[in-house]
Length: 291
Image (cartoon, rainbow, N blue to C red):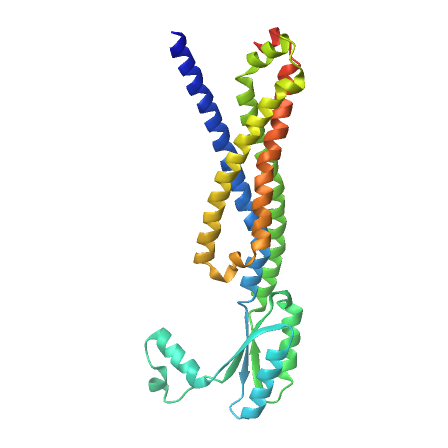
């Protein structure tokens, strides 16, 4: 009978530890995902901004040397990421490949124009900078037209600011939720041993002596939960880096390593503080209040 009860208690204890480790791991994993999002929010926004293309259309009588000088001056500008010269023949071939038919055979001539596609660095993708670039290009006599999606740029910049605000707000809220969830799991674990705590106190054990094994046990559970969470995060980083190489996640080892260290120490600190206050609560209760 006693052996059966001991086995039951042992299974119950293991189940309690498992639930604590699982809750810590899940919460820290989700917190890490949010941390990755915060760290890479600007990188993702910059990636989208740098996809905005300014197309400078050239007149048919533009001289080759003038075009090359314009392209070189743009390429050397500190606000330009890349420039690509596309001849009317290349543009025609591209349209033919996309549409699957030769429109020049129908028209009898090539209506397209030579152009230079310009992509700016993310920090310079603003309505004012694009307008300045367009005006500067149009001062050249051989430039026919400059096109870019002005409304898209304005909308993108507005959305990036709003998204950044909400990501930071969600990070703060989720961090608070993470602390509360882990604290709740730890308190339930300590609650299951409330009678043991009171018995030790009644035979003269000091509060520090009683609290120490509970704190160390919770720290070990916190470390285990954090390691599981970090393994999951490592897999996510690897997968995202393979699926979206342009983000260059593994080329930011300091940031990623810093995030991993923060998650690891959060697992330790939260479990330590939660266990300290949970045991303190039961130490301050009298015997009747335990029931």
